[in-house]
Amino acid sequence: MGVGKKTMNILAIGAHPDDIEYGVGGTIAKFIKLGYKVTFLILTNGELIEKAENRREEALKAATILGVNDIIFGDLRDSKVECNRETIDIIEEAIHKVNPNRIYTTYIEEAHQDHRNLALATIAAGRDISSIYFYETPSTFSSFIPHIFVNISDTIQDKINALKAHITQNKKSYMDVDAIESLAKFRGFQTRQKLNYAEAFHIYKHVEF
Ligand SMILES: [Zn+2]
Image (cartoon, rainbow, N blue to C red; front, side):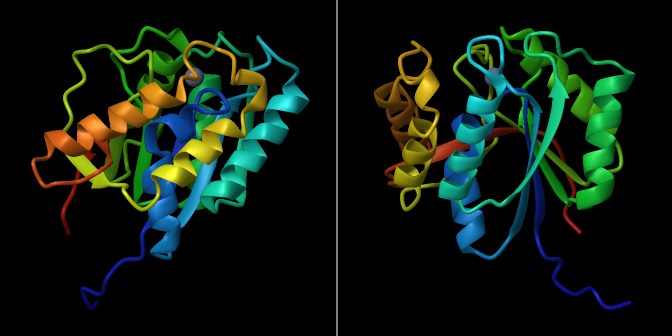
């Protein structure tokens, strides 16, 4: 068998509509432009603060802005995501369907229990996946150590537009676009590579073939 270049096939997982956009939105938009295949798995409909159908609709709109058309909804209950058989089954099913070679998910050290439990469930469900990266959200602990930086200077606007598509969330304190842009600016600055904007990831597992 030849070594051949494997096409990138990515599964991005969020507990709520808007998590993926926050953590990895700029990177996703960049990957789509590079021709990578990307699928979203959103575990809940975020129905705790707004009607499920509205948030689903916003999630679809936001994904379209990033160039993603493949979205799987897990239909778990908002704020009640656990690292149990049910959650692991949903992620395993998505993995089976997508066959990803990289997964992006929320980080373990998180104030939000849904994010924390999603991270743990991804590790269990994704045990055979060669790369699992954690992204940061506004509730990630400050202990988050970035290992990988992605230059998103060309796609920061797509990320912001995707976040703004979550209209029902726009008044929430965590949806502060200036803060999100500032974090991306800081992550870019932190690389010391003169990047205007970057997203940072903590690696759980990464295999070089
Ligand atoms: Zn969330």
